[in-house]
Structure formats: C-alpha cells, structure tokens
Image (cartoon, rainbow over all chains, first blue to last red; front, side):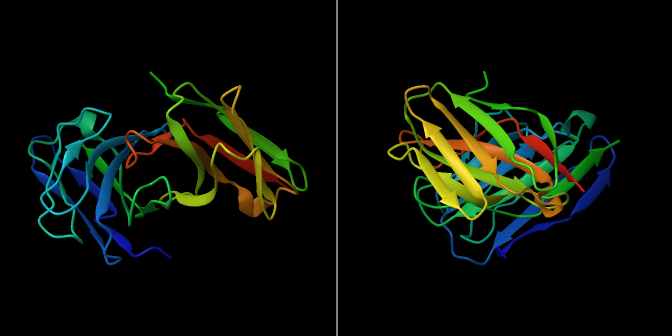
Length: 114
Length: 113
C-alpha cells in the first residue's frame, strides 16, 4: 500500500470559492505530480514538481496552481472554482526518474463545483 | 493530440478467457512502457512494465507484447478473473521528459462469471 494521501476524498463547493486539495506522501519522494481524470477516464498531467521549490505545468492547461514548500506536501489550489473544474484530481509521487520506477497514486479527490 | 492510443475503450470477457488491450504510439523517444490498473475509488497502480529492448514480458497471468517496429504494445490477461475487472491504462515515458507519464485513454474491463 502506497503512503500517499489526498484530502478531502469528496468535495462539493459553490462557484467562486477558493479551494485547496491536499496531497501528502511519507515516502520521501522528490517527484510529485497532479493528474486530472475525466469522467471518461483519461488522465491528464496538470502539474509536477522535481523537488522543493520546483513546480512545472503539465500537458493540460489548468487554472489551478501548486506549491512545493516541503518534500512531503504538494497542495493544489483553485482561486475561484467553476463548474468546468468538476473532475477527479489524482496526486502521485515517485522516488526517481520514471524510466526506472513507478508512480504511486493517491485515491483521488472528486471535486464537484455547483 | 493523443500520443498514446489505446483500444478498446471497454471490454467484456468471460471468466477464464483472455483479455487483450492494445496500444500504439508515435513518439520514438518513448523508452519505457508501463501498464497501470485502476479499481473504482482508487488511484492507478503499476501492474507490469516493459522496455523496448524486449519483445515480451510475463508476470503471472499478465503479459506485455511489444512490437518496436510497429510502435505497438499490448496487454494480455490470461485466465481472466472477476477480480481483474478494472480500468487499465497503458502509458509511456520518454527519455526527454523522463518525469512524465503519458497515459492512453483507458480500457474498462469487465470479467463476467
């Protein structure tokens, strides 16, 4: 069982609210990732981090932002939630280059913006 | 632009049958091809992976077949069981962007009794 945790598991929130999705891992992994998963299953990388103070945008443009102040923590923030942000958000981490290892995923946060 | 194309989108197989999921890619810089399995309410988890210097890798009932010249690879699940019912994603990692997994679109597998 991977030691990567996401909270909350489910969130229903009104349009315009600011939200932060939490992701923490206890494995000491340098690399962390956020994926957005469509209802149709597709996984899209929206943010990643190589380590503390490193953040990069992923392949899918997202209005969310991330920060990496501590190795174990990689929160994702939406300043003003909109219904188009409704999706499942998955956090993952890996201990090194993904050519040689696996990414460990959290259970996800299912976000609904009404 | 879908860099890793996966088919079928859904698959129903009888218990004991063989499940086959296919993937194709265009980017020749891809150098590692993992398959992830996702159960409802869970995040994906690594199932099996292959590098392009081998044509086949087998782990228990799960086999990856890899055709480098055709830029195709597939997952075979032998003796499929109801517990295999899940969504399967093929993925690829390139040497140039080694910290990014590019996923296929996913295949929802249902194994019936």
